Length: 367
Image (cartoon, rainbow, N blue to C red; front, top):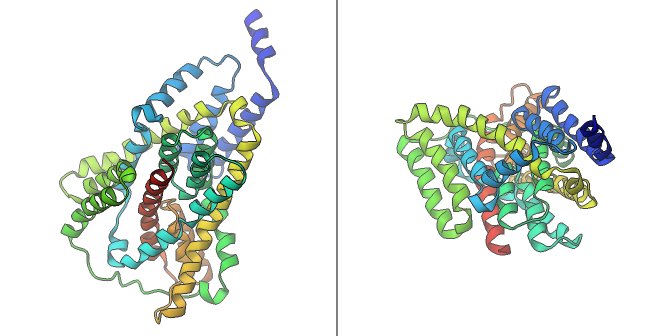
């Protein structure tokens, strides 16, 4: 009875607030089906870690130290990248390499938000870590913020993954604000372009890794694990491993990653003015990423005879494949015969590569 009373007396309103936040994440995962493999363990972990004298705290701290901290090489995010790489088919990008431009443009929000965070008084390592939320790539956000020793890793991780899950809500109104009805009705050819040989598909991840290694060495771990996963997929002799990486490995690591993130969701660390500001800046990063991708398409249309539907530029963020699906769905809503999936997927996978490169550039600049 004394122990029960002691726990009740140790309870405070901040802990209850974190239970509510955890409940909201669980609600979004179950009711709205928004990244349930990640948001559900994050939400439950937030409740678990904010119980008075929680016996789970030590276990989650050990998982965080081994799986996420720079001391052990950010193991979980990097291993997850193998699974993500195995899921990605670069064929749409290889048939139309100019789509890579949209992936590059959609990283604008990262650098814009980094400057804004600096103006708000964040130290440069923290400002850069906040900016990387705009990569729309949870593993990249974790690795960069850890390597830069940011004080706000928990808020950055929660913002990055939450906004990834909210892409279907965030992007459509921004896209509509940036485009006209006529632009959204633009049809694009779906002939698939020139066929891509198996040799090209195998060489692509190897060549990309080597080039990035020479240009942005700090991004090698991120790009290397991503491309290794893709090589497993494309080599044709490791089909069972590819299936395992895409499903079992990716899902298992995502579950552990979600509950481990809760180690940085303690009420006293999380419920601060800085956290609210970081979440707000993360939204700014997503908005400007989407805006920049759409605007590049509009500019290209001024000089191009073959018009591009500007909506595909929004898929340049790294939220794969959610952003591509959002664009495709919006295209069908405007015109049931307008199929943008192939083009938006090509832009989306280019955004995956570009976000990792952007993370490496930030590490090189700030470190």
